[in-house]
Length: 413
Picture (cartoon, rainbow, N blue to C red):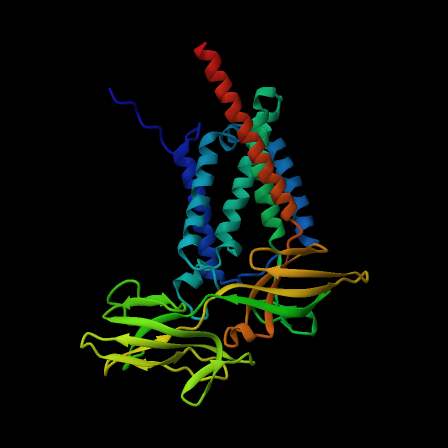
């Protein structure tokens, strides 16, 4: 005999009601986004975020005292409610991964639903608040009365709660700005993605911008379109002195390679000058046993490029060198009169007075002769609390894993 199906919304609530509530919240959120069309991207900053956080905690405590003896508390502090909330939040995160999270000028369904800025949308706000309520009630249920065997569970879930709470409240205080540094000049203003400028409580002077480059590469392009010709792999080969290689249908020999040079007459000469560009003398053997010889150069911002015409359809050229590593030697000044000599590198930030400074980019048109270095300055005062929450999750998970193994071993014995 089949078990009768429990009608919806009849207590005790289960997974069906849990997913309906979670999906209902994000549907309401998307309807608000579609109808109200509020300006996304507006975040709550200090001290308003602290006030709202305190109000939320007070309301959460009052809500618990109101429902603690009801079936609603058992549902919200149970597994179905947690799984429903986490599943729907995961769905929104997947949508974030599939949809570029950048402002869009044209108006379409994506912008009307704020799918391109989900972290500041109503659906994301609703499901996060719901998850915070569920997690808080789960923690309370496992903590009162407190049992030592629940320590790992409480620690990991409290860590998750702190991480979500701190990340949400602190999003408005996060500042991610860019600074354009010019050699031998001191800069104290930074700008955001919208072009708004801010005066920072620190100043940076660019003493020297340094870049190491790979050697340029040999490539064949179509004369008519300028597109890369790549019927076989590799389609580009790095240039080296005395290199002999097969590039598609041609055998190429590098007779001479000059990392920095300038043209004088019918050849290139070594030249250590501003804007000097790489050049190479090459010999190319074709399928008709004809040998072509000539100079090629990628040129620079003040030097023309030069290629070797192989036939009516194709030419051999030198690509622009790719950066291997670039960094900036800077002096950082702080309001207390201190100054620090630092070297900024990609993915190796320097920390000064709560700000992290990253090497970001440079003037690619000028290449290694760039006197401009673009750095990113980031301040996230709530990051430490997010790290604390993550650390608590790790400790709690490790404890539960260790305790689970210990129980299993004892049972086997």
